[in-house]
Image (cartoon, rainbow, N blue to C red; front, side, top):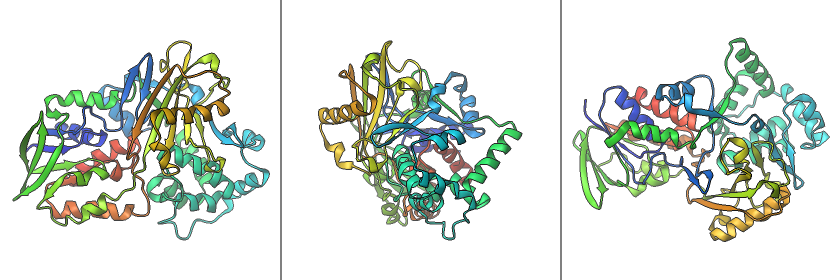
Length: 451
C-alpha cells in the first residue's frame, strides 16, 4: 500500500491521516501554516486562555465522543459551566434571556404577544411544498413568522456562520432541522418525539466541552500521533498528474521538494484551492466552482476586565445580536463563565465577533479602532465601567465557508473531479460542514466511501 499525501492539516486533514494510519497506510501531511488544526487554535497569554476559532465542541451520543475516547482525550474533556445553558439575545438594547420552558416563554419579553401566538401555530402548519432550496430565512418565516425569523434565526445564524439567514440553504446549513420537518412535519412535534425517544433509549444529552488548555488539544493530539509524518511550514506549490500517480511540489525550509504518490487528499479551504498550481487535472475548470464558496472576513476581539467593572452577572453562554438592533457586533461569549481558568482570578474574559456577511467593512478598521468599537457597545449592554486589562484581536480575512445556493454545484463538482482523477480525494469543512463533529464524521467517511 503506497503512501497517501494529505494537503492541509486542518481538522479534516488530520482525521483523514489518522484513519489512514489506523488502516496501515503510510501518510505524509503537508501544512502551509506553522501549527496544526486550521482555525482551531488556543493560546494562553497574561493568564488568559483565548481561542482564535471555535470555543466549544458539542458531544452527542455516537461518533464524536467515541472518537475522543479512542484518542484518549475524552477523560481530559471539561464540561461547560451549567450556567452556559442560559443564552441571551438583544432586544431594544437590553439583554433578554432566551426562554427554556413553556412558562418562561409565556412571560418572556423577547417576543410580542402576536409573535408568541404565531409561533404556537407551528404544529398545525403543513410541511413545505418546495423545501429543497429553501433558505434558512424563508424556512423560519414560513414555520414561525417574521418575529422569530428576525429575533431568533437571524442572530443564531450570525453566531454560527457569521452570515445572514437569507444566504444559507437550510438543507445544507442545518440538515437535522430539514430532516425533522420531512419526517415529522412539525419541528415542535418532531422535537418532542425525539426527546421522548432519547429518554426511552437512555441516550445522553448533548455536552459542550473543551480542554484545560483549549480546543487545540484535539488537533495537537492528532499531530503528536503523526510525528515526522506531519510537516508544518510546508506550503504545496504544485500538484501534477504523472500517469496513474501524482507529483506534489512543496517548500520546506526555503527549499523546493517533490514527492510522488498514487493517492492524494486535498483538504485545504475552498479559497486556497487556486493558490496551488494544478497540472494535468481532468475537468480542471470545476476547481473554479469548488473554490466559489463564499467566505466573509471576521474579527474576534478578546477583552479582559476586572470583575467588579462589569455590572452584568455574566450568568450564561453569552449573547447574540439581531440585525434589527443596528449594533456593530454580532455577539459576545462570556468565555470565563463558559469554562474555568479562562481568566486570572478576579478578572473576566469576553470574546466578541465583528464583521461577517452583515458588516464586512468593519473588519478593515485598525486594531485600536476595532477594540474601541467593541468596548463602546459592550459598555451599554453589560453595564461596564472600567477599561480592559487585556486586549487581543484575531482576524480571519476569509472565515467560514457558507453553504449557500451554490452548495449543490460545489458538491457535484467535487464528485466529478474525484471521478475524473483517479487517486484524488477532496475534503475540508466546505464539503463536510463547518461544525467540529461534522468535520470528524465527514473526514472519516471520505475514506470508507472511496476505499
